[in-house]
Image 1 (cartoon, one colour):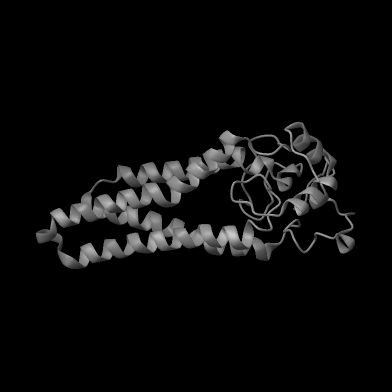
Image 2: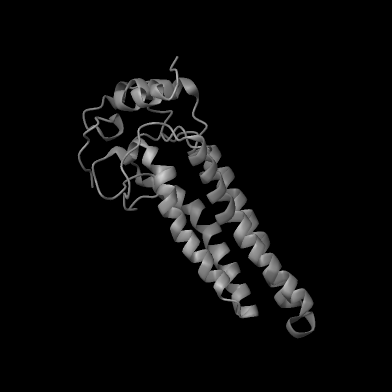
Length: 227
């Protein structure tokens, strides 16, 4: 799986002295299938619920373009996410056409590696993409479906109305759970330090940067000052 490591990023360096690294227990800085599986376990439920809910609305109303639009946007989101977020991650520094990481593992690497931190626009766009994919779009469509069933109550009845309402609530719960679990258990150890959800303490960030000159120099050029 492993490609070349031209920038000598310690995450991809086989000769890294991880055993004596003082921050090894603070970061998910080595590829780990268990961490990747954990990410999938929390990311798939809200995605499935959103698609199911929008498909349910399409089945009831005959308005299928909403589902098609959401699916196109969902796949496009991954392309934007790779550029705005993933291209700044140390895992992206591996010389490979395929991304090997703890989140979007297996995605094509469409852009070059950016060792500098994310800028304000990129951070805003990631918040926007997460909000629209998991909350705004699916809940708006399901809200439309609930309104439609309310107006057509005589034809569809209580079961359909309660069913779609339940799916909407489940979508909200799974999406909220995904974001909160991600932030608490994954973002607190993630080496993509400039992500808007990242909560790794600055001393840990600084020590990791000191071990990786390319990243440190790129961060310092943006005004960041390690302590």
